[in-house]
Image 1 (tube, rainbow, N blue to C red):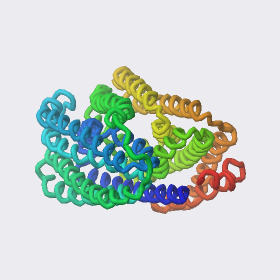
Image 2: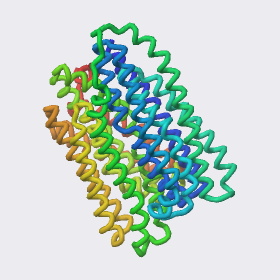
Image 3: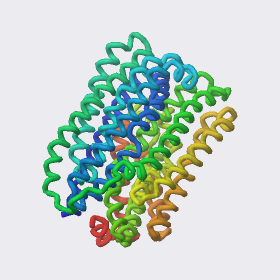
Image 4: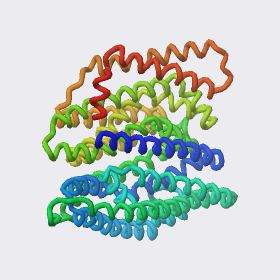
Length: 507
């Protein structure tokens, strides 16, 4: 029953994540066609601040809710579950309101001193009003993940994205003629509306589920010190994300400024920044939807297994997840490498985006492995390590940006991304293997899939180049239809995955 429930939730989160990411890419394509790469660059600067302040509203607390309610639900205390959620909501609302006031009254200072663009002021005054809704929503999502119920979060997120796109389309079309400043403010107002609607959907779902907690039966009294328990988990994660997001925000602000110092870049710095952060990276991360879903669902599973000292489950699950993430990353890395130009032209009509997809394709497996290992480590109470790791990485990136970008421009920034992703992946995966005592067969699990992915993709690309395909979409479809089945076949032929192992993974 539990296995079936996990698979069901994984499928729900995966499908919803794919829908959301696809809709997000379509939205970015539409937005780029209206405001151009410079407008996307300005939006990304504002969005960097948005990500920073949203971290203050939600990060860490959601993970704490998931872990604590998963433990509490297993022991069967309704009072304890409700108390955990209530304390988490109170905490996140206090932080969100304080952050809202700071950003609203400091908008002009942030725009002029940090962003270096006065056009961001109006958007900055609107964006913090989303924070209370976002913070409470994150707590409720943590609750539903702990309850092994993916539907409420999926429905809320899809509804939220649909409302966001609909609202932003109407608002941007209505106010675009007034300039990029008003257009970006309209986008932020659309986000505010969508966050409020998303919270409403989650809240009504919670009220319906809360009644089912009456069926739990366990200890009579809920444990005390709820706030202390939340802070024990949330504080390292939240502090890490506060500092890490602040450093990443500083990085995002420094990149266009230092790119502009490179003589060959000049006035196109903001456009190049927009193409990397707002166009190329969302496409590269699109195939990782399934991995993000699994990582989210594994937090309560790993916490429960570790609490019950079922170390063999932790070890075997870690081995299979790392292997699955690697093989998925390898094939999509190869596809982006050989077909990046066609994908960039198809989606954005920009050759520069295609170049960036091709240039960044080799680090796709590193990005995927880093992301999922970070999530699993938090489920194993290793949030302190991930905090130190992320701060170290961000600090190094900022130093390199200040030194390298004025001399090397865009190529220097791509080199920094390679170095950074290799470093964080090496540290996080290495720690995960050590903590879980996982064992991997390097040749069979890593090298053979890697070689197979690139050989198959290069051969498929060579074959398709011979055939006169006139449209990028036809090329991309045939590339995937050839590469993916052959790659799966090779994985089974080389023994990377076996039938019994697939069954074991599902268990």
